[in-house]
Image (cartoon, helix red, strand yellow):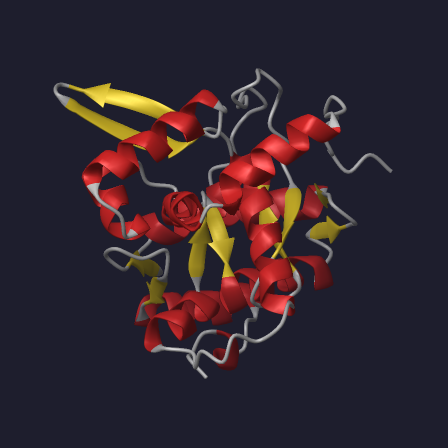
Length: 248
């Protein structure tokens, strides 16, 4: 069954090593992680997230941009940086899952960690316990069929979401390399070790949740808070249990 999985050109070992070396620097990893919220940030804001000075940040941003990992938008005198494509966010999420499964660093989780685990954005879609619970609910109801690396929106699922007011985009959404972005795909959630929904469907669900006031962005964080209206909506429409929407 075609799960809308895109095909990619084969990368050389040198190419993989080059990208890995770029991401392997802690400051650059922090920069990429900060941009996984889906919002474009200035060099000054990224300098704060990276924990290094402005000149050092400029060098990191230049290297990441030259490698095609970042895109730059200019507005007047300001430059705003964002991830070049959703694929980069998915790669970072997968690396986070590997890091979370590695040896413990004896660092007790803080309030920010728990907020991220409860509900957060992964580029332009929902992640954390809320994101995986949402994907699981749609799958269990036969509205979406989840597969290994891909997902399929069923006819019943499309009708349900459209009836709910979710605006499903057409097939003209294209990535940085000009390829058509899949309607459905899955991302391995680093904190839950389960899949959450990505692709154009995942983005549409996040947009709907923000516009309806079901969730709200938390400043300087990828974490989002779930409002009272959101708790009611996710329980009523998707059957998500309250324990998936509260901090543990």
